[in-house]
Amino acid sequence: MGYYVAIPLLALAAALQSSIIPDFRLLSGQVDLVFLLVIAWGMRAPLEEGLFWAFVGGILQDLLSITPTGASSIGLVLLIFLIDYLRRQLFRVSLLLLIALVIGGTILQQGIIYTALLLTGNRYDVLEMLRSVLLPEIFLNLVLMLPVYLVVRLLQRRVAPPPLTA
Image 1 (cartoon, rainbow, N blue to C red):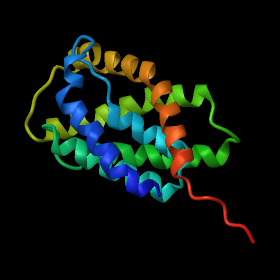
Image 2 (image 1 turned 135 degrees about the vertical axis):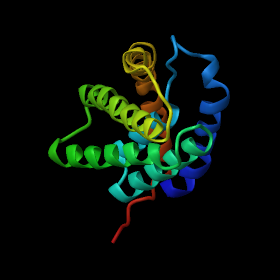
Image 3 (image 1 turned 180 degrees about the vertical axis):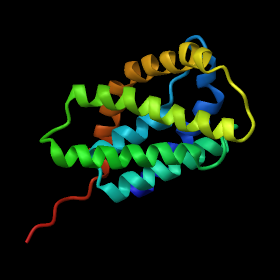
Image 4 (image 1 turned 120 degrees about the vertical axis):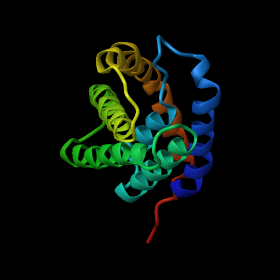
């Protein structure tokens, strides 16, 4: 059922991220709403559904930005595989795990995006990007992760199929 929710929700998040969210920056960093939705959904969804969310979210995000199409999907898909691995190793999702995933995931996601941009001929001052973009983005993602996670949890409970009875 999460497949039906993914496309409209991720399209809305990508549209907000490219239109309204840039008005609410901290230095040059902004919250990555698609990233947060994919992580939050992937924490409780089956691997295949999480991969669908990561792929669709990354493509929609790239279509509305200057990022080469598919670059965001690479980072998000890798994060879903990591989440699935950690979920199988741990008994439950903890706040500490969410914090670690947001910090590490933001670094991974932005590293892949900036590498793709560098490979396409764009030039950036790496230290300036770390200071003015990556650190503020990590902070903003951490601030909004818990509210996004709670909303996604409520949504997942509503769209989850009822258990089969024998």
